[in-house]
Length: 279
Image 1: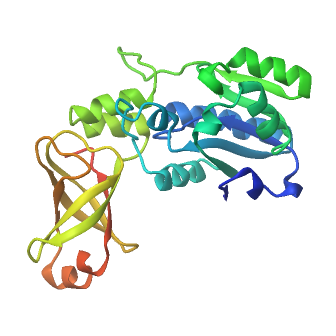
Image 2: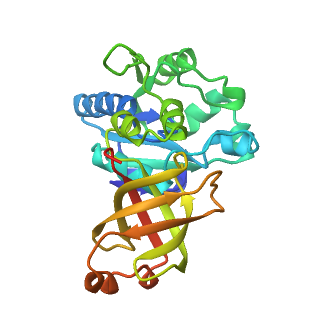
């Protein structure tokens, strides 16, 4: 999968594309249904499938005091999009200038002149541009002007009696209550956070600080840790009450001491942790 970090990174020879726009925070099952529609449209048009997303998430720039936490790190967002089979992702650095751009200007600059979109595939709640004024009707009008199709995927809900719409908000709610099992069901994969080691805490433990990804409620959780780029190791993570991204968290690796010595977090400053649904 190609990753473009600016409009200038998009090669001129890319050719026609089919584009989907959104934050894709969590790349949950609702997103996955949208991406399946994107890939199908790309195949129909003999074009590349491209996701356009933002970093940071728009709300984090516009409303830093009240914006919800990102469910996942950008690195994991990109990895999840690659798993779904997307050909390329354009990551637009979200700035005040981008936020002030009229929706019609954004479409012309990004979809038409840069990506040469043959079609655009979005969810029915799509909003973009200055003041979030851009919507489905904006896209349809632009499609008529610039000759691209617009495909809209309606809300998709979870099974069972609840029938709730898949959303990043739902993921945040269940993580806030500590239900990592439900989070995994919504995401379609274990929830992951990324941490940076702050200090050793004994031969089997390390202290780390969550730097990316949303922490669930306080408690002890089983899962899998990955030290640096090494193998996955059974582990327990202990999250204290009122933890934040500035709070030290205990990570206890569950493995023989001789193997632990070879994989010690002291050898790497980075740890990722996947929460088990059987915690």
